[in-house]
Image (cartoon, rainbow, N blue to C red; front, side, top):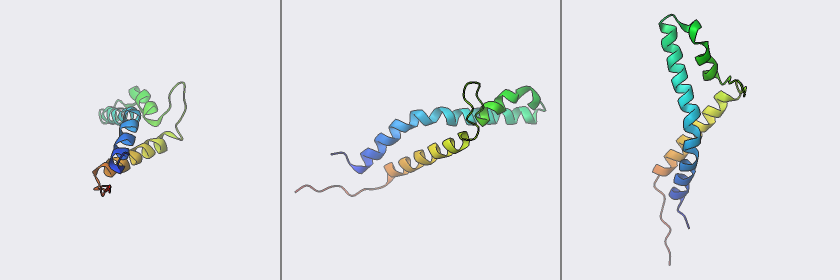
Length: 93
């Protein structure tokens, strides 16, 4: 039987590869668009802002994208913290 800590680790290991892509997309596009804005070139980089907001050509998830990112980060934080918590070990008689 798997311990509670092992379950947290398995859940985290399963979800982390799924969540890393949208989080990296948000991080990279937001940072690059901010740099373009500071350089006075934001009109030339509207595609970055569209990608950052979740407006993709095939999928239009603008309304859901921030909430899905937030939910994914919350789950990653909870499972990460869950791995660090000390759980009492089961004693077998």
